[in-house]
Structure formats: structure tokens, C-alpha cells
Length: 142
Image (cartoon, rainbow, N blue to C red):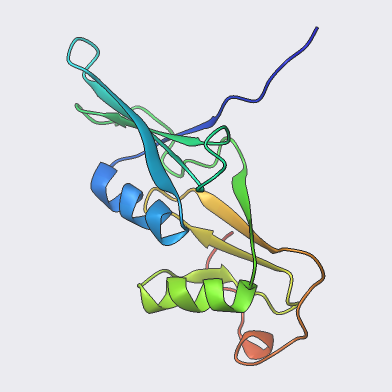
């Protein structure tokens, strides 16, 4: 049996806030499907040049009151970045909490507006430990 990766789906409560968050990570909208009959919107976002690896943001127009409250039933999304310190600083400058700072110069975790855990990994070798990251503690869960 042969399989091909298609996408990762996450449910979102505020489509615009979630799209803005993923845009901060560098993802762009690649496709959108609005279903009047199903009362939902699907927005696919992916890094430029990697349109075959999208995250699908599913927005149910009437809400998701019956779903798990922390959206943690699937794990996390992972993206590599060319400079983990610059990426985390960019996110912090835009109001995103760094839940697990890149103290090791290699890995960090943040959360989306819908509580989805996002792992950021340094491309290639880890960067040399640097402040303020090495002294920064964890915030919340990641």
C-alpha cells in the first residue's frame, strides 16, 4: 500500500486570528473552500515553495462547543526555520508567547490562537546558546 501525505487539519475558533498567526510563521493561503451547506470554511496554508505540505484550518461557522477544549488531541505541527532566535523574536514582537524558548539554539514551542502546539526547529546545526533565550524559562504548556 502506497500513501502520500496530504495535510494536517486543525480546528480554529477565530479564522482571521489563526490565519494571522500562521502568516507570522511565513505560511501563505494556498486554497480556500467555503461550504454554505456544511456551514464551514477550509483554508489551506503552507510555506512558499512547499504547497504540498499544508495545514488545513477548519472553521465551523456555528462554533465547536462539543470539541475538546485544549485542541491537544493530535500533538503538534513542526516547521524548520533558518534562524530560530530571529523567528522567536519575530513572534514575540508580534505578541506570541514563546512557551518553550530555544535555550539550546535548536528547538522552541509556541501555541496558536487555538492552542495548537507548534514546534520550531533550527535548520542544520543548533545555534550557539545566547541570551535572552538561555535564561528564559518555560511559560505554560507546550
